[in-house]
Image (cartoon, rainbow, N blue to C red; front, side):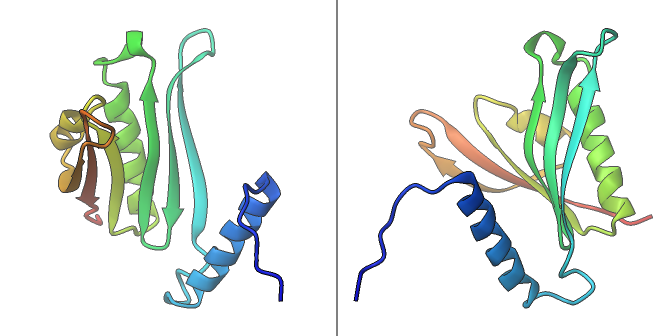
Length: 143
């Protein structure tokens, strides 16, 4: 018997592995949620149409996970990040999600998320070295 080899895979193999895990997971959640998996991209553009900020998130079952929230450095502290959070929270309500989860580093914006109602649920020290890696969650109240 030949032992399986472990190697770096291609994009197609990555997509295949993700698809297979999603299929497996779907067997273990309520039927009405089993096919809920959607990638969300929100952007903020300047007057010339250039992207100055945005968010990448995933709607999965009964929550949304924010993967990336980025604002151009010169445009920070102008309310754009809050606008993105408000928009994703509205999307969560529209889709009857229970919560939003996200993560950030100590050199990024943990205070920003606290200010916007997110609760710290975990923190890893020395990740990366000299910094902390925070995990946050915010319950979504349905109207």
